Length: 470
Image (cartoon, rainbow, N blue to C red; front, top):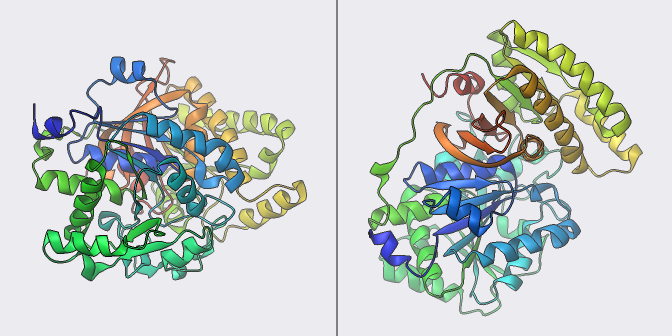
């Protein structure tokens, strides 16, 4: 029995998590797997029997969701039962995974609403830790203000001045202080462990946290994140809080939560990073890219791939808002895609190229005429993209695909009939290549990369096709 096993005798597993979108869910799985923690990601809550029979060695597991596009009422109906289910698994930590760019608003993906539900469901706990920063992804929180790089090699911006997040079509960010951003979504008080508070001896840092908890009204504590050393300190504080009681500790945050915890576990010898067995799977003959992302990063990736001979087809998303027109449109696209694959082309299906694509404003107008919310577009378009992707895979036999866009990824993956994924290899931080599990033999073993809008350099598509090989 190793050190971690000894500490966890009274808990079946270390951590379980729910991702508010699919790409973020694989990001967490990657963070754990690359640090020597065996992890699997499910599309629906797994039964005890499935965990025991198919995945007996996993120490952490996640459930990929789509709550980033939900309204608060939808969260109350659909997410609350999920958070209660997560509590029943008895893991030391239950993590509600959010995007590292804090995508949320009072009407869509409200993190404040999640905090309120978490405080009610996990009422035995003193507070909810919140961690947004992820240095490996170039996301930083400094004195409560959040910063993010624009792409893999881009400039770092304050969140409310970020070229993508400040103009996001569903959750535009106008405030970089995350406490003020949360105040628009909930009245619950949020304290801050700023950078200086995280410096120094462990006992003094712990005492500073206790000072912030002296106010019994404090519902959550936001942790600054600038570098790995302070992130490890945050991991230590979270883990100590988690082990203080038998009930699970509820945490809100990006994959910074996992990087924090694994950094602490490694420093204490609780996990062995030398056991990492992720390997590049080799080059695929062809790649299908399905993109519902309108970020400038994805735009640069599409444009780069076109320069390398990829074929691109723009999907008529306005047709897909009406079920009667969607079927005919999908069949027409299928007839265009299959001949390209038959002659060996790599194919990109995309809904828009970049935030300035006229298709975005045209889509907004149609949504308004139909009485739909902007968040509805992710669900409606994602479902149709999923059906089209399934038809393409079944007809072509392709074994490696890439899906770009957090909301898109969730709906597409569900349409493929996949029930779980594990990490095969890291392509770039936040964009791993995964192995899919499905009852349908045509989908079982499928290699899938789920890419958020801000993930990867210009050559990311080709890196996925080559399996991470240089």
